[in-house]
Image 1 (cartoon, rainbow over the protein chains, first blue to last red):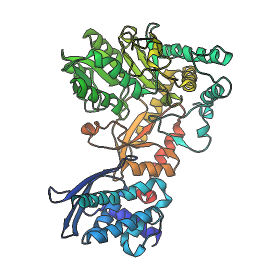
Image 2 (image 1 turned 45 degrees about the horizontal axis):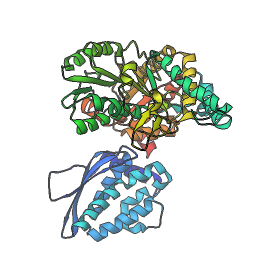
Image 3 (image 1 turned 180 degrees about the horizontal axis):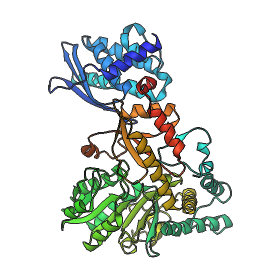
Length: 143
Length: 397
């Protein structure tokens, strides 16, 4: 993907983030994801029905990378099964950490494929992945 | 001024993160190097030449510190690891045994975490009450509000001399006078004041003054707690061990030192104390009034430029220290910080450990520029030029 196009997609998702609104609903899984090394701080919530992710929301204060990644990630996961979501998360994490990954699974999330070249941005890009992973982990524990 | 003394400034770095820590002049590093390469030895234990030299420097630095903040000869200077340890020592070595349930400690919402959390812990432990003196529209502490808050239950006022986000200079002389009249302990967090303006422990009637070496051209790992002489006698050490006891016996009895070393168990940061001494001598040579005046000029200059920029929201145009806090419209503070780093400008983004301040200013995070003696007008111009860019976000991604 062209670097300028990547930048535009990130910028658009930062300035016009999707699903950036929390709702008062106890049927959602919830987690706060605050970085210990920087000032990103987002609350996430996710609804799962019949093993499918039907909604992902978040809100709070975070940088351009964390916010845009949360926006793109939420879109990528809504409508996926839990197993599909887990595969996306693993491959996304591998991409961010400069390991082998399946590009085909990530769609628009591929805009972050060079983020590992900016070490201080890695934690920002991983923020939504860590939040969703925690919520899915909590789901496992409930079983 | 004195830019040539700071090796980190030899390139094109603009360092505006002095509220977090400061650069070290060659003189400080060389004095510490001498200890590590020419006369390394422990203190108060050896009779050889190196040990005698170390003892002298270590002990004399207490007087250097006391003179620097105008403490009396009977007042004490305890070496700590920095402001955080100093304030914790005030709370747990003194206040814990002098306060009781229901006693009120007055703070403000612009205090740093290190002047809030130890009090929270004491509240958990012995049930003190914590009250926040309301700030005015400029987020500053006024004497009127403080006086109103000083009920008969108030036993302590613990405040920063200069706050680390708003940068307001509190009138510690008047506050100290009020505290003395009402028999209230006056604890001052000097982390942002001792490095930048003249501080007068005696004239301000301070009971406790805490500060850090690394924020005043000195090394990390060393700071001071200056204590009023008569209160020092009532302090109890939290840490016990070597270097602070006279004797101890198998039946559990022990006798402790009666001077500052009672609070310096174990081998202290000797090289760092020597570095602190060197930093104080360096600052004294320039003069604290001159440093303050210089920073204020730079701040006024920066404010005059930023006020003309529509996309900048300023939070503390009124305060008299060299701290400027702002946000750039539509851009998260940390993105501004990352962007400025691309222009070799070091600033700080975040809540600056003043995590209650957002309740007052309505923002969790800000960009903070904090000046020091080695900054100049060209540094300010570089910052303003960098911020005068419509494509900051594009450049930061």
